[in-house]
Amino acid sequence: MKITADFNKREVVHCESLPWLKSPMQGVERRLIERIGDEVARATSIVKYAPKSSFSEHVHTGGEEFIVLDGVFQDEHGDFPAGSYVRNPPQSHHQPGSEKGCIIFVKLWQFQPSDRTHVNVQMDHAATQVDKHNPGVTIAPLFKDEFEEVSMLHIPPNTRFKAEVANGAELFILNGSFVEAADLLQKHSWLRLPLGSTIDGQAGQEGAKVWIKTGHLSDINKQIDRLQNA
Image (cartoon, rainbow, N blue to C red):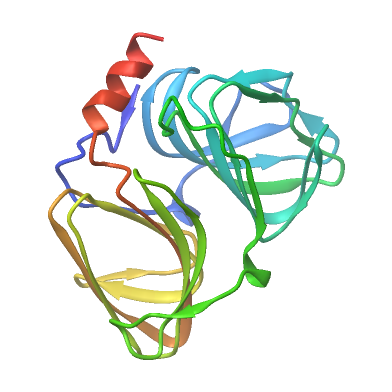
């Protein structure tokens, strides 16, 4: 299966318009944003757990990162309420589920194989810093290594945000709206930009809270090769 799998193209997906598809586990449904592969896949999805649903225990061979969008996600390591940003690196394992139900934005098989860093951050409580290049914008750093950088942007109403992203970028709108290259990105819209791109957009009248990842597409072909040889 291949969905938005051409990494040389700019891609926009308005996730709220996607259908919910059943997963192999009862009570767990998905909206497929980006995918290469079948059940073992390089994937970006919105996943919905019905109350008292769960996945069987599994190992994240290629790593997993997720944002809890609604409800409380749970596993044997604890409870993760809405606003949690979590990274489970390669070779980590868990049995995920939700007693009362939840919705998460999740990415699989997109880690460097040597990464062993666990992250659990409540994004709204993360320390922020001023964006020196975009007046009025603040940044909450979530993760950074030599390969990629992940942050949350707070963009005030009607404020412009511009950034050169030589190694590509991925944006997910958590709240508010953001117009980029004439595309209106609203809550739960997703944007992926290829190598050599520039982000040049402006928040709407309510401002925008944006999850952003940069750098991770610099070796996309190697990532895909690792998946296919796993």
